Image (tube, rainbow, N blue to C red):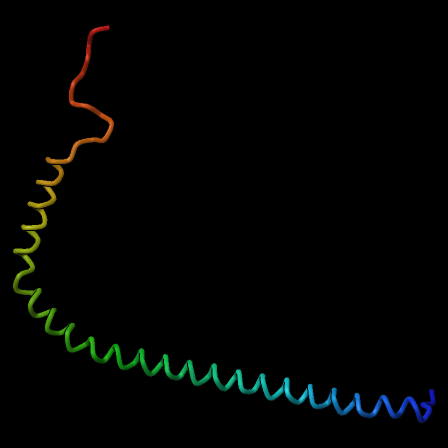
Length: 100
């Protein structure tokens, strides 16, 4: 297949345009990958720091809970028992009608 002079005048500029577009797409994908990597690194760093800060408070909470743990259990059991006594069933009544 041979190309004529007029066809070359159209084909050559289009190949340059196509090459430029392919290069831009490749660069865009590289930029997207770099941004995703930076975002992942930031999130990882943030997660690491947040865990470190919470460990200090977890130790303090553990010591405080150990002393009052039995007292808390009895209070919770009493509250639960009181709530069970107060609650009534939404559609079951307390009166039974034996008349037919």
